[in-house]
Amino acid sequence: MSVAAEAVQAALATVIDPEIRRPITEIDMVKSVAIDGGTVTVGIFLTISSCPMQDTIVNGVKDAVSKVRDVTAVEVELDVMSQEQREKLKEKLQGPAKEIRFNRPGSTTKIYAIASGKGGVGKSSITVNLAAAMAAQGLNVGVVDADIYGHSIPDMLGATELPTVVENMMMPPRGHGVAVMSILAHKKDRLDPVPVRGPMLHRYLESFLTDAFWGELDVLLLDLPPGTGDVAMSTASLLPQSELIIVTTPQPAAADVAIRSGTFALAPTVNQRIVGIIENMSAFACPHCGEPIDMFGAGGGHMVAETLSKMSGTNIPLLGKVPFDPKLREGGDNGQPLVLSDPDSPAAKMIYALAEQLGKKSRGLVGLNLAVEPVRH
Image 1: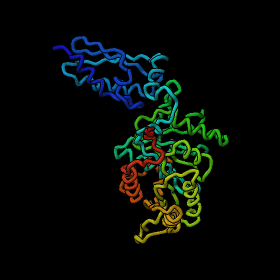
Image 2: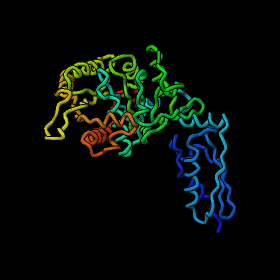
Image 3: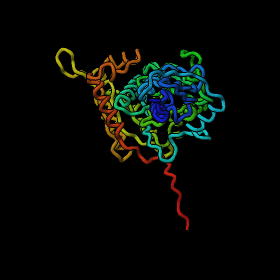
Image 4: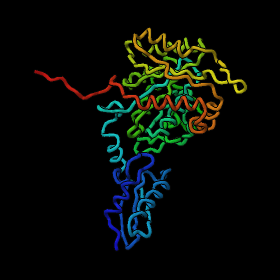
């Protein structure tokens, strides 16, 4: 019995490139297939010679083809795409024009900008854990570390590798199943400061959205810097369909500042929808007596939600209250989000509930290009 070539091709179609997340047959990575008795030799084009995922691809090919009937051995020969092939691949994935794919007609990606009025309220910790929880729930998730000056998302998700670059198209590194883009893609040293002004902040954010290949995301999260400065304005401009989630602590002083972020979003020149409020570092149970301890005060989340609801004339809910847990900070320091390291903790359970709620929410029509033109008579 000889090995069927059609069966080998079908097997190769099940091998997914770990960075592009498409079948290798679909993105022209299969160079050749040779069958000699029970031995199958597969030629594979890598996008670049130093492809960090080549072992994963080779093992995937061997595993898939070895399951084909009558195959006794699988050999993989590696080659590298030419510049012309890489250019064709980039055009196939991103199209001929440089654009923000999330703004294309029919895009169903839900985009949440995570904001806070001030620093230190755990906004990045909430972003990272929401992303990891959504990925664990089976969603394809990406995070843009839009806090250019204070970037921390790569470390918190354990995704500190540089992107693979194919003809200026960047493949975001992944941590815990989440694709991540940050200023680290443009820096030689992770400890280098970022001494840039407003226009460059806009260009960096635009680069994260246009030069990275995100694939078909279910959810994109943006970790915004505190306040209502350049990046917040650029986000509303570049992603008009993005929706805002405001993080605050229970402390009234923090809530006051968080309201300003909401006021900015509600301004007619911005018109960004606010999904709701998340109160972080909320009351937690005393380990000795079980009574709730309000370490950072109480009522801040309700205060922000009620005030912004009155200002907007719509219901802006308090989505949830994440109890204080030192392990939430520890998980950020070691790249192991709490929702994965201790999923049964009260804080992790709340974040999982928030992730499920936000992940299943239908994408709004605000800013959506429906590609509909008026009929002229």
